[in-house]
Structure formats: structure tokens, C-alpha cells
Amino acid sequence: METPNMDYLNALAGDNLEFRERFTGILKSEFPGERQAYEKALQEGDFEEARLMVHKLKHKISILGLKKGYALAEDYEEHLREGRDAYPAEFGELLDCMAQFLNEL
Amino acid sequence: MTCIIIDDEAAARAIIRQLCEGIPDLDVIAEFENAIDAIKFLNKDEVDAAFLDIHMPGFTGFDFIETVRHPPKVVLTTSDAQFALESYEYNSVVDYLVKPVLPERFAKAVDKVRAQLKQKPAGEASSNAPAPKSGEHGNELFVNIDRRLIKILFEDILVIEAEGDYIQVKTEKEIIRVHNTLKSIKGKLPESIFLQIHRSYIINLKRIIDIEDNSVLIGKHVIPISRSNRPELMRRLNLL
Image (tube, rainbow over all chains, first blue to last red; front, side, top):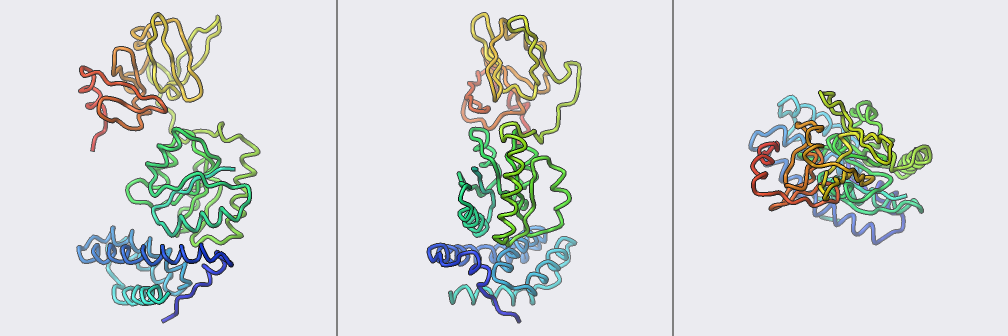
């Protein structure tokens, strides 16, 4: 599996350490809630809500430079739109990878 | 140049704010995590531009564009490229940025906003709201002021207030004082849009921002609701 990176944040923040710190704080605090909301929706079979959460998570996937993960999320979003739960395991691994990366920041 | 940021995701708002700080003449006036709060803000304050997320729960970016009366120049931000074509159907949309937004691309979008603002001052931005359907009253009213007949579009009227032998027709841009009575003008207004909610006030139902206790907020005007007119007002609202 590809590894998350901070290339986008580096380009955005430059040497602005205050922004860098604030932004990583936002990612760390916002990601778990979005993941939880996604998993809850999936458990409840609410595919539309799950799709909306995948859409939101997709932004963070791209912020962390996960290109394959982004493509996976795009496919998954489309499957959820059609009411099909296609990649829960693979998508779950992606979220685990992001969670670990954010925890280590 | 002034702007607001509308996005339900805190990380997205932080990115746009950071990008704005990289543009010397661009001031972020406010951030909103939902479109409704942004609409309330824009009913009282003007800005040149709005960086607007399309996907927001409940009230989307497109809903925002269709609802806000005089929209600023809008730069849409989204994780999807699929809405690009649809977005340009709206006059106020200047550009469309796919997240995560890159600094160079953001600067181009701001340049586009700047160019459009030069073509047309922000206050003259055309409305995205659909024009009212023509009925027996047409879409406008002509009032006699100093021997001139002044046209007022129904959709522009917020409130009409009785003031002795005169009435005040209040729009967002001006207050027009006319020698007439509330009863007389009431007959000239389409009932589908206007409602008398107090012995001294007729309001445009489509311009209500919110209702609290015994008053209605329309534009910057807080209008009292009389007890006898309240049931009819509540009946006419599309309550959830």
C-alpha cells in the first residue's frame, strides 16, 4: 500500500510553522469523526450517508498524497451511489493507514 | 477585495484561508460551515467573492447560489470534476477548483474574479433567483413619484410599511415613499408573494430570512407579526 505524505501541506505551508501545526491539528481532530460517521452509516446500511462521508474523506486522502487511495475512493463512492458496498475491506485498510500516519504526526 | 469561505469541512476552510493569505489584496471577512449562515450574512453584508463548497449536508453550494439574492462572484471548490459544466450555468460562478486546491490554480481563480469585478461592480451582480411567473399583476408595480412613474419589481420589494397618509416601499437598495394606503397597494400585489402580517406592514414572503417569536427578519428589517395575522403566516410557510 502507498504511504501518506505531506507534500501538499509542505507546498501550502512553506515555512509557516504556525499554519502547519494548526492544519495538522485540524486533520487529526476531524478525521476520526468522519471515519466514525462513515462506518456508522455503513453498519446501518445507509449507503447515501456512507457515500457522502467517503466524499468528505476523499479530500483528506488527496491532501495526504494518496493517489491510488483517491482512485479507490472515487470508485467506492460511485458504487455506494448505486447502492453497492464493494470495497469495505480495502477502503478500511486505507483509513487505517491514514489514521496511523496522523497519529504519528 | 473581500471574500467569504463556505465549506462544512474545517480542513478545507483552513486551506482556502491559507491560500487567501497568500494574495495581498484579498481579505477573508468570514468563514461559514454551512450555506444558511452564509446567506444570512450576505443579506446584511456585501463581499466581492465567495469560495464555496458544492457538497454540504442539507443545503448544497448550488442551493446557496440559487437562494442568495445578490450573489458575490463565486469560486466553487469540490472534490469532483463532474459538476464543472453544471456550475457554469450560474452567472455568478467565475471558476471551479478541484480539491486539494493548488496555490497557482487558486491565484488564477482570484485573477478571474478580479477581472470580472472590473467588468461589473459587485453590487450590480445579477440575481440567480428565478424570475417570478407572470400573473395577473405582471412582475412589477409602477409608483408615481414627483410626476414620474417609477418601476419596482415585486421581487425587489422586501417590506411595505404604512406611515400616515404614505407608504414606504422598502427594497434592498432604497426606500420609496409614496402617497398611498396599505389597503390600496395590497390589491395591486400578488397574494402568492405578499402577505400583511401587521396592520402597518405587508411583507414579501420570499424574502423572509427567519422568524423568531413575534417578528420576521427580512433584509435588515425586523417586522412585528400581529397575533391575528400569525396563523395565516404560519399556514403560508413551507414548514418542515
